[in-house]
Length: 106
Image 1 (cartoon, rainbow, N blue to C red):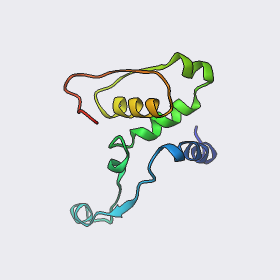
Image 2: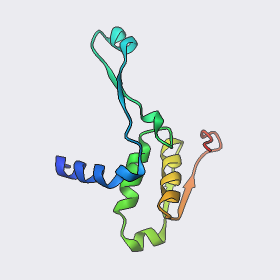
Image 3: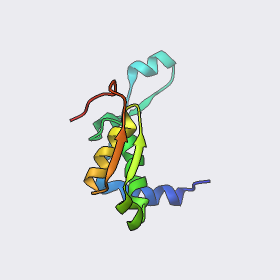
């Protein structure tokens, strides 16, 4: 089981590599659901999704030997994009296999 200390440690580790995204109220969704709703704007990450957090955390947890060996991922979209962007930023060789129908990112 992952505890609060591990979560806080991971948050500190990835902080320089991800955007601290805001949360905002969503009156429309709140009205639809009949309860107050707050959403987190992860679309503001460089990769367009929250997947950058996990990719950065995993890459930063690798040993020097593991980083030197590189990483491989198969993804239908957001995970592959996040891994490619974070691997490039951290200078880790990455091979990402994605279908042709996956969203293009620049």
